[in-house]
Length: 434
Ligand code: ADP
Image (cartoon, rainbow, N blue to C red):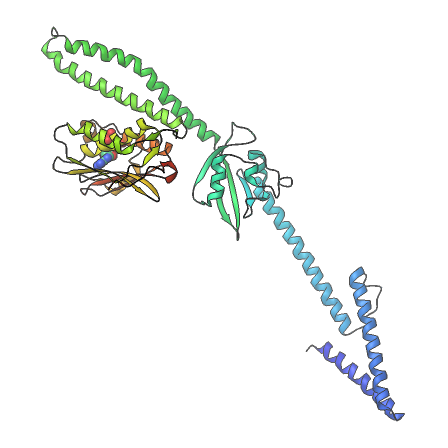
């Protein structure tokens, strides 16, 4: 108990004692005590009402509280009030600084609640996506940014991936959108202007496509003359071998150009059409048959446990099978084994090409689908490898919402698994064959 509280209590007690004593002098101590109690009560009520009015009207000068407990309460209240005002001011300053720095950010940041409704956003979000802090507060962000990829990302609660969409303000602006978990059940939608990167990659794509296209015609002429020359018995023996080599190299160049053009087409095409039901089991059978006649080829087994069909492009899926199979054949010795499987499960379907061949060092696996990447450049070139096959496979799979997983160990064979999601399957079909 504080000194003031003690003094207050003693004062009240003394007053009650004095009342009782005076009452006792008149022969009625109880009346004396009652009178003193009423006096104390009257004084307390008056002070309390005055204190409440002072708090309400914020006019403390008009009231006299005297020294003691009321004065102490009053000064404590004033102290707390001033402290709260100081805190509020420093929070306001801090908030202003935070707002200034988020507004200075070149990237858009949008705070969303659990229902994807806008809570707040910075200035860049306004410039990049046309979001207005006050007007759009409480609006669902997917009603404003309507790109299907972004809607899907917001609904999926995927905090790892990002999507690229056109800005609703200007379709020449491309935005990279990422969602970050924020607070208890809030999210932060980050928008980054990637127009320049998209423009450069389009320029690169166009350049490769145009250069390949332009090189095709002169190469066709050169190849034509080389064909004629190689059939011409009148050319000297010294030229026989160079002409054959030139024909081989011209054919290789035609193959490179063809594959580069195919890659450019796949890169700029959207998702594969889904109205065709591709019979994967049949394509596997045909591809194996096509390779079957070749000499020095490892034994190829087929393991098709489902006749599930696929929504997609039949020619492209065949390219995937042929590329994976020809790789397996080129990298597996004659006494090795290759298995091509088509498996169905609740998670989708898998096209798997596995071999017992030379395998791949784990350090090379992440780079396999890069253009012109070859583990052993010299050897691969000798056996006809260009380094574009797996890049094509990756693009075809992306167009079919599928993913490629490579598992391999040097010297212990490889497995190339293409996983197709259930949405890509014709679900009335997948009856197990065995
Ligand atoms: P390439 O035309 O050289 O085969 P790819 O893009 O198809 O190009 O393959 C890239 C590289 O991946 C190959 O050069 C080879 O080193 C490696 N590779 C692909 N498939 C296999 C496999 N089944 N076994 C071992 N290495 C493989």
